[in-house]
Each structure stands twice: as structure tokens, then as C-alpha cells.
Image 1 (tube, rainbow, N blue to C red):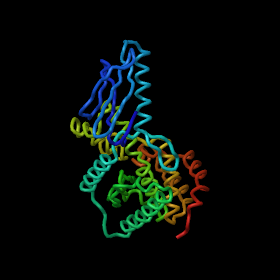
Image 2: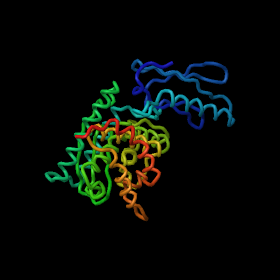
Image 3: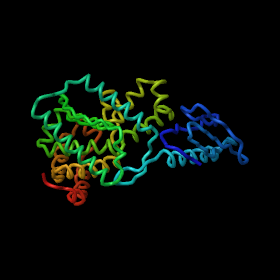
Image 4: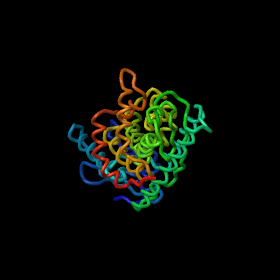
Length: 326
């Protein structure tokens, strides 16, 4: 039923009149099929899509069947496995487009903020970042899928900002606020944060979150079409997906599943880089103490608490197997 790469597919949905749309696709042909249905078939640049869509009748059962078929289509063709965990995640945005949006957003963010250079702290951010980068690259070579990092342009910056926050955008674009350094305290504490944030990036949580936002906020528009139709809103959604929602008034906490994946991968990455993953427990305990009526943005998007600490402790035996003291 399908051939070609998923990056060549745009979202398919049904409007109120039950008309089938292929967003962002130039040529669509509606072919008759079995009674009570149609087959929507698309051929473009060697890619073929054929999916059965129930379109006859005007009852809730028919609409429910249509939604089930569409959901099945999305799960089948727009999902990819998360490294290590194997969870199937929704990725509607081609990776090339995601990286381009990420690089642009990161450049704009850096241009609008004061970057700290030439200090011991900024040098430490660069050093820890490179160490974890090498560990990530080695991890995916060992797993036999180094192509996951294709198109990455790693960059690490320390930003002058009193907010205790940090983020990593798709493609390895990392920023650490000076305000989080009193919480990290040490090089290994910084490695906890950078390993965790880079794990979000390589697990493609930004793409997953952007895909969910495109579905909910923009009715399933393809990213390229959303940027043309509503560029400002789309860029705001991208910042929220990348963990910078407070910049535009949209706070989007990572899901519990995404946080667990980032914790697990992040511990492995920092261990492979020569940092003791056991320090993660103390870091998250310190971070939890910053909560209250006005918690830092990092806590708003990365909820912490005893449950998280307990889960990390359960992950430590696995991470310690990768630990090679530097």
C-alpha cells in the first residue's frame, strides 16, 4: 500500500463535509472502491498512498470508523521508534524541515540573548557538551543506527539569564542559562542537565510535540503550509515544542513518558562520557526544592519530585554499566 520515505507524506484528514484532504500534496485522485467507501490514492515523486476512508452516511458510527481508520493510518505511517525504549511516537514533520526550523529558532534565540564567552563556566558548558556529543555519537554507532544524527550541527552556549533553565533543540542546539548553574553546582551536575536535554533532542521529542501541536492547534496542517498560513503562531508552537514556551506564553510540560525516556537516555549518555550518573539523584533533589508558587521554567516543563528521584534510582544500575570513570 505504501512505498517511499515517510518524509514525503503529508497529513491526511476529513473535514466536516467528509471531504478527504491531503495537506501539502499537489495531485490527489479519488477512485471508487467498495460500496459505502472511497479509496484516496496519491502518487507524487515516487511515493504512493492508498487508504480506505469511510465516507457514506451521516451517523456517529460512520464518523467513528473514519477516525479509527485515520488514527490507524497515522500510527502506521507517521510513527517511528524512540531509541532504546522502542516506543512508537508520532512524527508528522520531515526531519529536514524540523532541523531547519530548529536552527532558525536557535539562531534567533541566541541573537536576542546575551551569550557568555571566555569564562570558566562557558568553557565548562562547551567541554561537557562535546563530551556528551561524543558519547551520543558512539552510542548510536554501537546501536548500528548513526543516521539518527544525520544533519546535526552541534552547538553549546551559556546564556546570561537568571532563570534556572536549559534546553536542547533538534539537531544538537543546546543552551544553558547561568541561572541553573547554582543548582548543577559541579561539572557532573551540569552533565546531568545536558545529558537529559540532549536526550530529548535525539529521542525526537521536539518533533513529536510539534506534531501534536500541529494536529491540535492548526488542524493538522503540514509544517511548510503552517509556516506560510500562520508563520508567527507556528514559530510560537515550535518554541513551546522545543521547551521554550515561556518565551511566548505557552508552557508545554514534557509528558511523563518523554521525561522517563530522557532520564534513561541522559543517564546513559553522561555515563558513557565519563560522568557518574549517581549524581543525578542529588541534582533532581536540589531542583525539586526550587518549586513553589513561582517555580522556574525548567520545573514547569520538567516536573520533579520524589517519584522522579525514585525512578532515576531504579535506572542507575543500567546506566552504571556504561560508566567509565574519566
